[in-house]
Amino acid sequence: MEAENFTAMRRAMVDSQLRPSDVTDRAIVAAMANVAREDFVPADRARVAYTDRAIPLGNGRSLNPPLTTGQMLVAADVRIADHVLIVGAATGYLATILARLATSVVALESEDMLADRAAETLGDLANVTLVRGPLAAGWAKAAPYSLIIVDGAVQHIPDTFAKQLAPGGRLVTALDDRGVARIARGEASDGAIALMPLSDVEAVSLPGFDRARHFTFS
Image 1 (cartoon, one colour):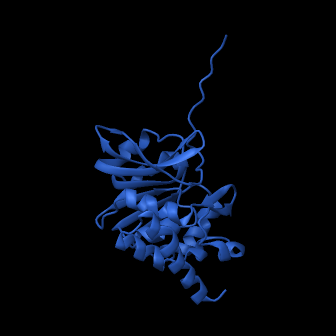
Image 2 (image 1 turned 180 degrees about the vertical axis):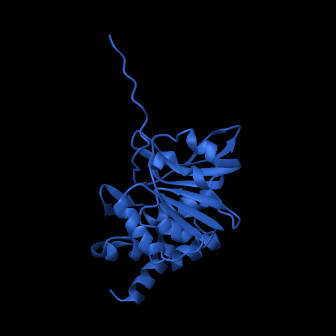
Image 3 (image 1 turned 45 degrees about the vertical axis):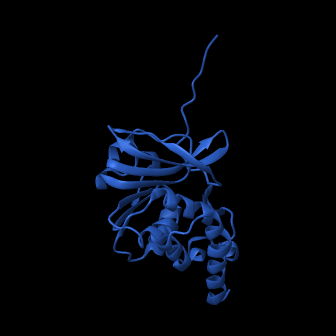
């Protein structure tokens, strides 16, 4: 598909998906309008990269719909001075957007196939560092962060993340409540994060964040 067609698709994404749903922050809209989403999905799915739905990436992982990305960025209240940790970097789409909005970004991915692709898409972005490891462990080596974005639906947030946030630092994710995902935001205070649900959203699941099951015996 010709490049100008993808440009038109990005414009349509902004006009028909983002703006009508209150994703109107100029910096966020500009970043999403200029990052080529088709570069972050498998080649055979490039034609549907801008549709309002999740895109499978392989190995059970998917890329969030564009509107979900925009809404999470709005909830995150990204600031130019932010030092950001992305949990679930996948192929690097969110990291590339955040590279335009924040001073420094650490992009954490656990799946080697996705991380290898992210290494290609992120290229030589000087303010993004790609790291590999278990998602639920975060990345303590570069802490503290002023912002953590857990880029997907999770059942709970481990206490580890509160320890990696600076005082007053923000965390944004999608909480999975019995199959319904809601964007949630919280701030670090006294070594804990109290998350407040904001709005329902379509978000892809991230591995490693299931609640522990409790068994009773009779």
